[in-house]
Amino acid sequence: MNVAAGSVDRLARSAARVVGRDLVADVPRIALGGLPITLLDRAATADLMVEAALSRIPHDRPLIMTSANGEVISRCRSEPRIAALFAKADLISADGQPLVIASRLIGGPALPERVATTDLFNDVAARAERLGLSFYLLGATEDENRKACESARARFPLLNIVGRSHGYLDDAALERRVAEIDALSPEILWVAFGVPREQEFCARYARSLRNVRVIKTSGGLFNFLSGSRARAPAWMQRSGLEWAFRVAQEPRRLFWRYAVTSPHAIYLLARSRSLGSSVTAGGHP
Image 1 (cartoon, rainbow, N blue to C red):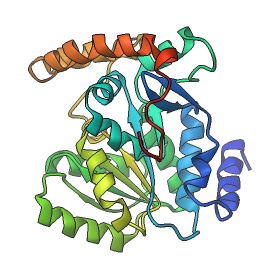
Image 2: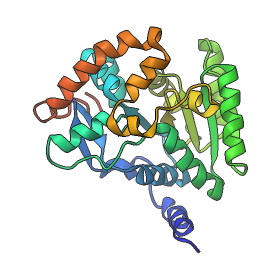
Image 3: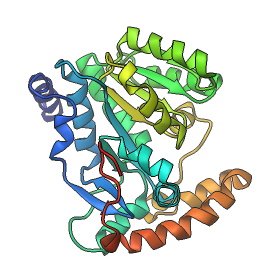
């Protein structure tokens, strides 16, 4: 048995002993820009998701995992409503290289790496394929969602995607979709509505999804999986310049957003020591 297979098998054996939210209770975190960001690398984050998905102990709601970048840090500081939504998450990962760079400059424990949701999806899918865990993909347009699903199935032919749906649903249709998802009982639900709609979804519907083990908010994940949006070159990602690549791709939609939030985020990250954490993951601001 190779090392990777052994690691996955150990996850399967240990999961039955752990309640999902107990997995994150002792996860180390660092306060960055007022948010408690987990100090796990990508592989450890994927392992944690899989452990939670494998748990068969009864629970009142899924484990809620979300991500933060500079824009999220800025908006949480400026908009208490959004900060309150992020406070309901059990774990917040760093999906932005500026957060990694800031953690190394302010002293204390540093983030090991960026946990980009697009990369994390592939890590978790590879584990899920081996263990027989199931996914549901919710969000984006019908065309984007369908292509993302097709891409995932092509790359991971044994992955069990039990269902999918676009995200352009009115309240009544979304209620029906939530009931459908719960009946299908996917272990992991990937929700790609963007901030703050995906956090609002978690706050409103998590307790109606008791047959789901993990919800992972996913932002633009399906756009990347479908191939409609290109990722920045690796050197730009490592340098914290992915935002510039995205602005070049979609200047009308993103220029003013980043023009406002990026300087504010840099200021907040620089003040991380004095800000501490104004949001407690899994609790309340």
